[in-house]
Image (cartoon, rainbow, N blue to C red; front, side):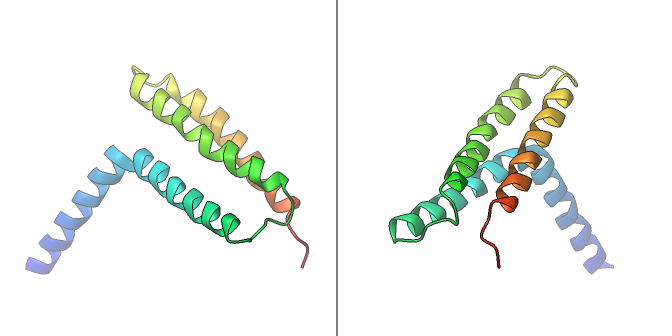
Amino acid sequence: MPVASILSEITDLLTTVVGDYGLYAVFGLMLVEAGIGLALYLMGGRPGQEVHLIYGLGTVLSIPFFIFVETTAKKRPAMGSYIWAFALLAGILIRSMGTGPRM
């Protein structure tokens, strides 16, 4: 059973890390994605429409809001903010897909 105990320890570690630092990991990955997008833009790559730059910036700029709510919320008052922000980001995602290039 040593394999099962090792897998259990790995699962517990990942659950703890994601639960405690998931928001920060998402923020970090979004910054990496923004860096890749900026590098592509500087090398001549352009989005289907320039409005996609606004969508991308709006999404990245919303993450500090999540971090602020997460660090200042006492119990569960943050849940309403998360629902509102999720709906906003889902709207941005749907709109950006709808204005993308047609294949």
